[in-house]
Length: 270
Image 1: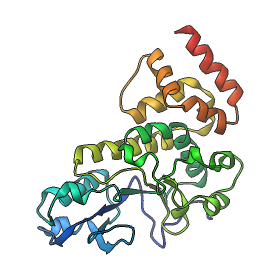
Image 2: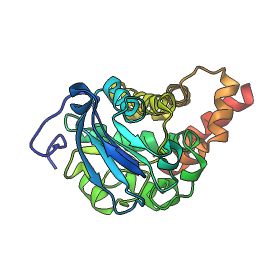
Image 3: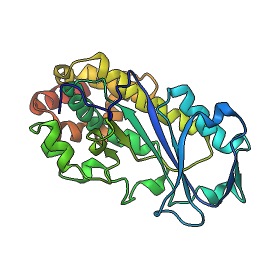
Image 4: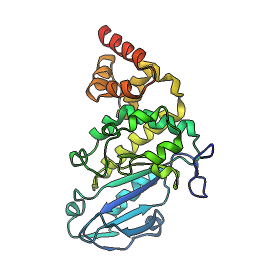
């Protein structure tokens, strides 16, 4: 791997998203405007789906345009359904690819570690049908956490599980990290909140250095940023405790003993 991850032959800059919307019972597609059509790269058949299932794949989009693409699928009249809820079956899902073609390998590795700390927050934000789905397995349920600290990016990509909810395998050919957690839903507001959480993690990663993970105050800031609200000190500790963030830290942070002491001290001073 070079200093930065390559997205094919094209370098993309900044926070861009590629969205894959899986839907079933699609009768017909006719994009109502050129603007809507310009958001999508292609529409393909998906063998994991049934009943005339289709996967709508977008071009690399800004956050605002990604939300517009989701809204267009359900509210523009471009896609014809018999029953929208039926089209969003448990077999369907929404995958989000985040651009990392312009990000250093150090920052990519840091992003992976930061995600590991707050993975429970991401699973709490999606439908319960995604919790035990074999196509979006939590990395905390695999051996991957044990290898994050001591492996090169090349080794991690090679050994990563294809169906991990947080999937880094596409770094090698697309230059993206894929979030596979989210269900198929017509609820654009919920989709927008999902994108906000991903962007909050991305922004946090890009604005800080990995060494600060030994600081419990920064951990609290990370949880608050991803959750999308501020907390009092005792609320923050409860969030960390409830979402197993502390257990995750004990697994992946090299200064785990020190950090655990700090978290415990913070709890005792509440």
